[in-house]
Image (cartoon, rainbow, N blue to C red; front, side):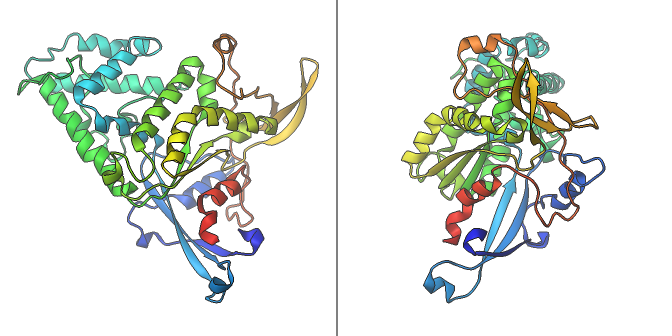
Length: 407
């Protein structure tokens, strides 16, 4: 945009005009500008930032009108909350059956053992026991947190608010969990199942539906971050689980004019960017493979979105570039490597991050030890980064998402 002479300036709009919690931009910059630099705290609740972009419109007729302003609203929320979308189409019995089916196989079977053992002691159709319900919910929540640990890296973790509750921390509406009940059967009043089912319904109605109704109705562009490297790091189960989670989420969202969520979500989302973050954790020769793998993972939902009239793109992205490209020798060969300071350390290291497969790895791939994609601390930046912050792909991302607004 600036290369065409359109961009004049941009500034953050005061939070007094916004309806949501202000994104902590200044605090994030201060953390990365500290000594030593540190990553800001991850997203744990919804927040917003508005950027007013002053530009010169293209086209003779528009140029005569003088400069114009585009207000860009960016809404940040935990990606874990998206996994709740499929629950809106499920009954409590259907949702319970799906979760319990996942727990029949490892790694979930082992991780869920304390919760599943406790369920065996609960009289599902007996009198409602508040203490038993809360204990079952606590054990189930611990199980979900274990699923999210880096060594397991599972993504299909529902409900999302159990791992990142936000404003609902400690609320009784979160005191429920899946139960072994027959689909289609009705709970008797006053039973434990009736209590759990009523909280499941309240969770869907008062938390999930309200969140999407209040915060998604004005969206017309969406960025979906897919941590491909984390999924590869976690092994076959983590990779397959990430794909299943994305299929469930995007199959429910139904981008475009139609779909069962249209009355809830309001405006049509006409541009969707699938982005693989942490591109700076691999060498530049792997960016194409990273994009290719993500495109394959998103093939089916991408086709549906295009059919609905949406525009879809795939990018490898690093909003903050924390490494430099280097060369080193390993096994007698000179290879491309990345140089950066690993989190928790103080001196730079030159590391070989391994290769990213260009397509879904074959079964034999998982028999080999996975590549360990390192985690680096942020680069030193100025407390007033007028010259910008090193990145990978943000310019292409912005061009895709809002470039048409300047034409």
